[in-house]
Image (cartoon, rainbow, N blue to C red; front, side):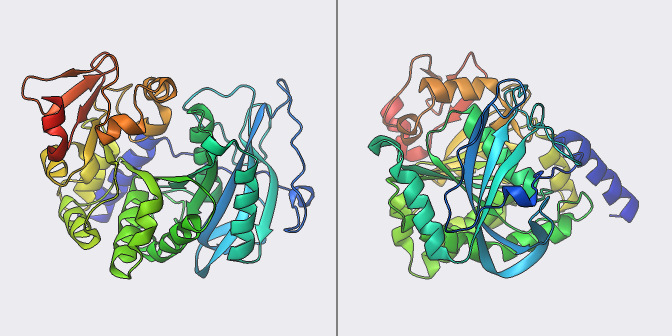
Length: 389
């Protein structure tokens, strides 16, 4: 492929994924809180903002930066850095969107950080998470671990997790893994190398999460971040840390940008997958179509062409091809999906095959279930088909 053709493909990704304009946190020195101090309670305002604040605990393999707008850079750190970032949700926020500014965020209309608390070591990180868990009712002491995708700077990815947690109404404590994406459209290859580099840090974070007092841990990876997830799980399995898997209440890979052959090799390396294990795919995901062409035309796991393969691997497949446009970011932007999760129509029990919610019907071939006015198709793994036939 010529450089001009590659540039054209990357431009398409830029348009399709809506990654134009880099976000900044909007921090000043007044927002920095010492590790041994309590983070001040946020001042909420339905007009000037923020209307809500989402605390996010961060582990990152990015290097620390002196720039408070982006306190962690695109450079790769040999050790994990830890922090807490409180993210304000603007009063004008629309579900599924991340309203952002590349200059100085306005809390009335943009996502903006309200506090930043860096931690010196992993034990402080664990202690702070446990303190946050202790504030929750016993049935809500869960962790939501999110791994971002390609072309994200630190602010982009933290804001996306805050948006997801807020719009879905997740009661869990948010924990973010930020691997060193360049946050630049033209550096796709750098990001792929960084995704491989980032597996060690995520494996370490999952061990730390398992050491907290959380009752459940939900792990979500998006796009290239799904590759980081699979590599980290493979590493844990091969280094004798499968005990971490027992702490995971579910794994979802949304629009995974992984070669299907590579993915099958990762599954073999992992062995028995944690359950429920869910992959969200879409034939309408044009960004993955472009990614597939850049990488030689081979199918990507998230492009919807390998559903039968995923079923045989014991994976639940959510086909979002006809769900609110089926875009690369539909997992975080779809109002229909948000409503299904909030109502319980799409729950852990459903993905485990233990429950069939109202509105579902088994197709004639007994291999899939349609939900949400035919907008989402759930393909059950082979091991569960007998339960619904």
